[in-house]
Amino acid sequence: MNRKHYKPGLSSRIFDAGNYLFLIGLCIIMLYPLVNTLAVSLSKPEMIIQGEVSWIPRGFNLEGYKYILSDSKLLTAFGNTVIYAGVGTFIMLLLTSMMAYPLTLQNFVLRKFTIIFLTITMFFGGGLIPTYLLIRKLHMLDTLWVMVIPGSISAFNVILFRTFFRTIPKELGESAYMDGANDFRILFQIYLPISKALLATFGLFGIVGAWNGWFDALIYLNNEDKYPIQMILRKMIIETDNSAMNAQTFKMMSDMKVHSKNIKMAAVIVTIVPMLLLYPFLQKHFATGMMIGSIKG
Image (cartoon, rainbow, N blue to C red; front, side, top):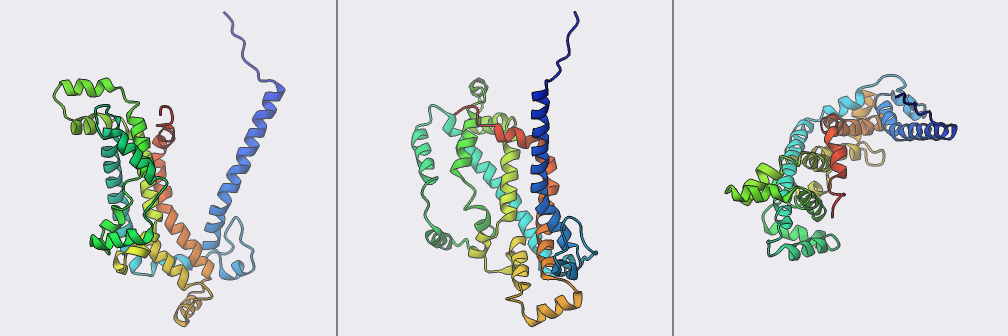
């Protein structure tokens, strides 16, 4: 039997062409700030002052990157950030999973109370000052734990984890119970292994959040040796601001022939490159993970 090939009509082709043009334009709009940032970071100071830098670098200048990398504390801050992001994300995924799993069990006595309590925390918070006083009372200031513990549990994350866990056939847990498995074994050997897309998605969110975070460090850390990379870059940007620049910084920038925008844009590139390198490894799970939990309430 011959099958006729479907040929889209004129209106369908026009619609497809319009979609392509719209998506191409959207990509250009979204890529321009990144490309412009890279171009400015690599351009000569005189070209930046004249406003001639757009898509491509004008001249070639690596002095902005040299200025940033000349700070010996940058490598220490980079290591601190990797630790904060890695440990914080692991703790977040672990505690969120352990809190979400009992909320899927019908025989869990405090299930409804816990869900109501979590919902309340989504609308009301203790505030910055009470949180600071609590952390000081717990002797967590200037420690690793102040960067990874306070934000490890999010009501939103717990609810999404719970929603996904409820899509897993309960027969898996019941059969494991019959074989003598306890809840910890069911969670870690059954639920989490089939939740890779969910863990990858929220793991990426956790790593990006920790990598870009600086406010908690500003409030809770006093020792510069424990600063994350964002705090060091923030300090560099403030020091190179024209209104706050001291004589020593001005002389150094003059000797290196570097513009303040070279440094600022180079700081942005240094900050985002690790995340750009990480994303491709999690991309295949990311799209799936974004849809997980939205099918069933």
